[in-house]
Image (cartoon, rainbow, N blue to C red; front, side, top):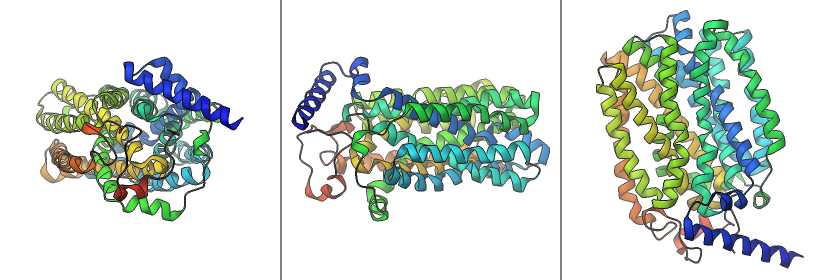
Length: 448
């Protein structure tokens, strides 16, 4: 019986690989390659959690008006959930490897309800707002659960698309920025926190009944030592830098743009939310495109081009004198950031394989920290230099550094764990001994 299962598994994988070689992304082959209800549940979990994570930013104009906040205080308020999420992603990434993504996700969803209840019933001071921001970090940490859960079901040739679909849950920001200000006009900003409990409950039920642990995920739990070994590798530091630009840029801008557009161009709070939603829409739904293009053309090549686009668009956004131009360049910036997220996570599963949970937690933490830096930069540099676009220029410089670092390291990566331009290595390719230590455990899917 075991021999029959192995034969069927090999034949199935061979068929998938042949389909990939013949035509690339075949939708039917992709659906058969994994477990689409789990992919959907992972997306939904990330989507609603992301909505909760950025609610302080979406409602920032209302909260800042009530408490009379300075630009620096606005930046810090919107940055707190991002920093908390960065720290908690390390914990949830470890728990994902230790107890599995489904149990970890259920715990995260349950804890996310707490800050929403406090925001609805008890948010009467800035100290309480800051506490809400810290607790909302649990929602931001969902990244370290949703992506590994989706990834473990899919073979290497579909990693970019699968991770892109699950990661497109960052479109939850769209729900917060589009509906948050409108609901705040009708029910007050505190009421919005209470209303957010409704989609959270629906999502919890869908997650509970749709998702399933992948068979290959049933392995020995990771130890703290395994986690620290991933953290100590030089490549991890580089991936943290790269992702702090793409994801950090996305979430940092998503959290602060409503305030930025309202303060710089004088648009209404609702219109500022609408324009932010337009930017978020571009970044969220182009993430799978970034993953798919990276599967086709190579993650390193795509990421290099996208970093160049990010730097250019950030500088043009800082200069833009009108709301129309400013929004246009910000949409393009967010589009590049979203596709950049997909490009980074086309590479990550090939590099970390069975340690994907720990790696995702670490990189997700770096992404959240990047968002914290950007939100703070947007507020503090506005106050320091009396220029709204100063924070955008500062972040453009950091993005340029990421481009230079990627160009410098790619020669050492190619042939070691990735093929030219960031394409997957052939299954029969040998891994040099120097690279074997972090890559010897069974991969995301069995390839033999």
